[in-house]
Length: 336
Ligand SMILES: C[S@@+](CC[C@H](N)C(=O)[O-])C[C@H]1O[C@@H](n2cnc3c(N)ncnc32)[C@H](O)[C@@H]1O
Image 1 (cartoon, rainbow, N blue to C red):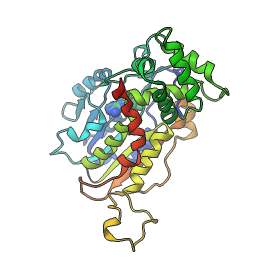
Image 2: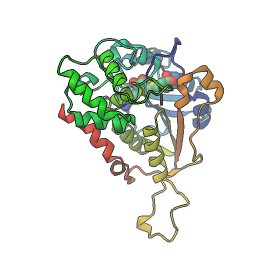
Image 3: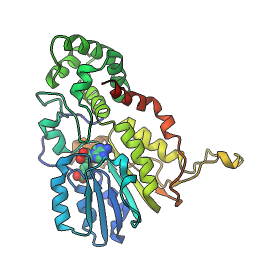
Image 4: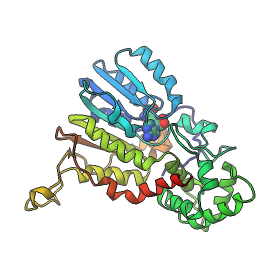
């Protein structure tokens, strides 16, 4: 799990960049969708190859500055939309054959360093955590949601063991005064039964809140489904994730839609999986020791990819049912 503290460095490192380039092979040209432009690390590398075109998205309006520079430099080869990646199917792509859709989940160094975004537990002031195009903030969630909802958010989105005690203290403290970032950190620290020396005490609750505020579970699920829809046959979905919850969803999506040995050939036709994907790597690709030394937060990164084996866009998937228990928790936002 990535620690939500500001790393002592000056720029954003693009995680597993060389590995991504070797999977998507931009040297042979093609159109690529970069779902998470961020600081433009992946996009800039792909645009170094002459016959490439990028359609980039990012929910954070602050990435528009980088997008404008790229639009100027690569006039007919770069398009940017300030959109959430769950909506890639709404892009007008009729003429495009999409060779790869790339997701680099989470947040960039620039975002975590921005005190206004309140993503770091070093930040002072109001709780926020909105990455862009949100309807509510962490301040609303912490100061308005019932105890039972906070508890579930911390438990399921952060795997926080002391979720009950933390939620109880939040309710007690917010009766006296609105809770800001530093107050929340103090509440968490004072609620922990056992101290974890590997990560900051607030890491798990901050991750949980960020997932909740940005609806990261449904973003990922709809992002994956729509990526698979817009890809051309032979195209690749590539995802870099940073926590076990994300990796579980990605792994399930790819495996459940690909041929695996466990599916019997005697199974009735209707029950057979539709083998939308071909998987060449069952295990995730992780950063080398050298990359982790250069960029410590990359240590929790996992890269998975799947090749679209059939040119269909109306495939069936049970991923929404499988992870419905998590989507229900995201929908507690309707109580706000
Ligand atoms: C880890 S950064 C990407 C860094 C980028 N690959 C690079 O090399 O510079 C993740 C970016 O994804 C964006 N993002 C996160 N969730 C998103 C979503 N659901 N839709 C669109 N953008 C999203 C964030 O705003 C952030 O800028």
